[in-house]
Length: 83
Image 1 (tube, helix red, strand yellow):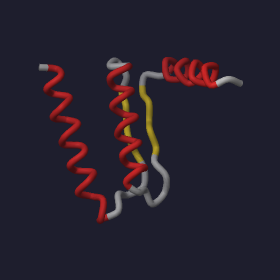
Image 2 (cartoon, one colour):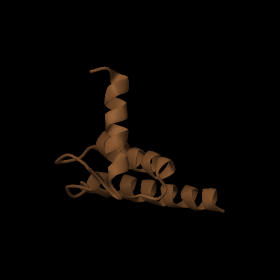
Image 3 (cartoon, helix red, strand yellow):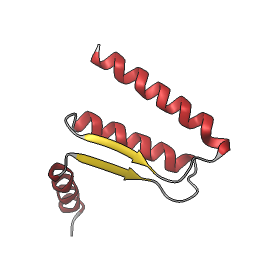
Image 4 (cartoon, one colour):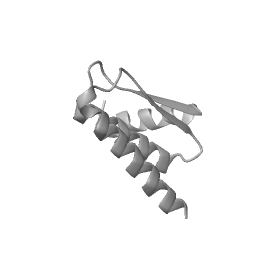
């Protein structure tokens, strides 16, 4: 299966659902959290009518500040785009 075919398959699956839940792996690291938040923002921008949720294991203490800052920045930048 080509990459283009796989991408179409993924997009068709996303289009089928009103709510998309993005899970992260156990004991998440910074890459995991960043990827999860980035994917959420891409999906929100591409499918504004959908409900996009991020869930998973508890954020490790050493990354909790990163998570809070990322959420604040994304909420703030999203509000600027909406005016």
